[in-house]
Image: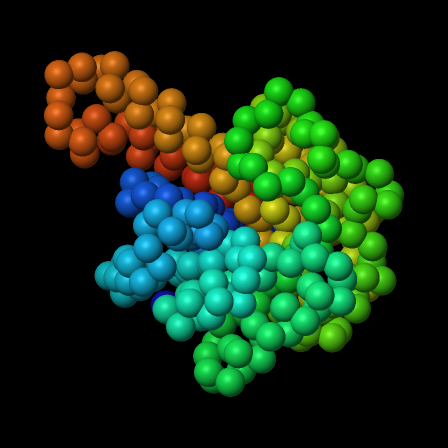
Length: 289
């Protein structure tokens, strides 16, 4: 592998495609993603939020992803997703993650800017080639299956990320990417059932900021909506809930088919296969394959 994550993201944006970002919280998730990328030979980002990092370990997941990248030669990268403090961001940067999502979305704009800027400056001070992604606009917090849109998420014009605010945070921090609120939400109501994305707002934010956009919460959005978002400027697309559902359904099937099995890797194989199916389908969608 010779290209950096930055090069892959910029190349994706130029070609009207997107790099797939998939969250994991166990080795089965890593295995499913690596096997999918081995088949399709496209770049991928493995994401771990703070909760997921607390479970798998910051240094541990960094070492695992590096080992897979070196062994396979495939473009597999690692992102510290939804990082809510400088201390947590610093830990991921020190562990040589490829990127960090600096999530100050709940902060007032000026405080969000200070937070993101401190992370950008720390990366520069360490002389590391690590991408910083800022986040602006609230899209919920739970990657789970909802029966309806959560009460704390709104899709009206005032609740979406404003292009001027997006331009300001990018300009004043030097963030490489931005994750806006554009009608997206964490979690999903059901596959293809989430509210429609505001494609016009995506275009406005991309034009105002001049940087690649990241679409969070893409589980549950229709294929057509996701493709439109990619064409409008989303060069990275996040999927988590659909993978979690696939893991659980696969695990339940594995246990049902092997009721007396006590070797975990044997009944977890179906969970890996179900996650792999999701990753392959999404990567084909994101890359127009």
